[in-house]
Amino acid sequence: MASNRGPVSYEVRDDGSLHARRGGGGLVSGLSAIGPDAGALWVCSALSDGDREAVRRGVGEDGVRMLDIPAGVHADAYNGIANSVLWFVHHMLYQTPLEPVFDAEFRRQWASYETYNRAFAEALAEEAAEGAAVVVQDYHLTLVPGMLRELRPDVRIGHFSHTPWAPPEYFRLLPDDVAGQVLRGMLGADRLGFLTHRWAEAFTACCERFAGGLGNTRVGVHGLGADAEFLRKRSREADVDERMAALREEIGAGRRTIVRVDRTELSKNIVRGLLAYRQLLHDRPEWRERVVHVAFAYPSRQDLAVYREYTDAVRRVAEEINAEYGTPGWRPVVLHVEDDFARSLAAYRLADVALVNPVRDGMNLVAKEVPVVSDEGCALVLSREAGAYEELGEDALAVNPYDVMETARALHEALSMGAAERADRTKRLAAAATALPPGRWFLEQLEALRG
Ligand code: G6P
Image (cartoon, rainbow, N blue to C red; front, side):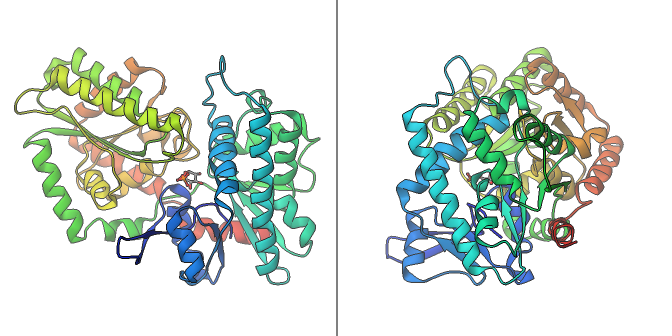
């Protein structure tokens, strides 16, 4: 298995000791459930100084090989190409009057992306047993299947995309040669996996338009589900109970809660979510003092200026709403911008409404986790542009993520939903959300790749 982010990351403490913690994001949540248990080797990248130190000291988890790619090469490939170009293309995030600009700097970064992909391909070629199945993950590693195919024609190669795929009209923003390299790189795989039919169809359309079709590569859809067993157990542990008590204190007795949990990620649409909440307070004064919007936004990709600016914008709008509507006994928005998994689970448990409104999202596991963990049922306001919508659309309240007025109305409807209906819907949402738990999701792909 290969991915940029691995299951652990290390931090050097002041006393020089290394402290390990679990990596974040949908990919790691999905794959952590399986990797080492299945006897697989997980090849990933050293992402921090702590990770590099761990590689140097030879510290590490069993079944994990971290690649110490030179920091500058990694920064170009990860920040420059993967997160500022490919992520932007697939999530259609560019503000096109000014971006993108494919200049000499881009070409330099693209060369690093090739080097970084080659480092993975070489490590995999070295590690894989004769005829092994190798599953490559995500947009960071689109060139690996093609490169590995040349080095090791005997192995079975799969690639899985945890993001959306751009439609041809948007994908063609990329320089022709780069677009061609990405598609040909992916088509080096025997089988490609996507989270929804929509993304698989977009990829197929791009290949038909720009690469003469799929060739011998097969395409499949595997909608990664929530890990019910893990979540139910973890969310009932003592630290989560403690966080619940603290949160209840912050919210105030007898109030409804609208919860959202995201990385501080441009595509998650946190700002428009706050604007919709402000609209709700404006249009429906009856909710003032009676509801709190609990928003957890975990710092992500803070090396990129636009992510830092976005995080600032989230903070600013939350403060504006609190200044405009808050009273001595009521803070309308409770915003926390730091990572705390136990606190997220606590918020999931007590949420009356979950707001998941990304402008575009490969799947969105939060939408699937909340109904599984919820104590008393939770209404889900869900963007029709999230991959999860394909599976959860029927029992969620669907919104156009750009339409703040519609989102405000959906929040009102969700807050007003009767307890029985909410509980019924939550049950059905939880069933749909756990239809393909991570273990089976992975095995299904392996079987399809081997078969
Ligand atoms: C998305 C991507 C993953 C990525 C995760 C977290 O879910 O599909 O590949 O790991 O975001 O982002 P990060 O840049 O922190 O790895």
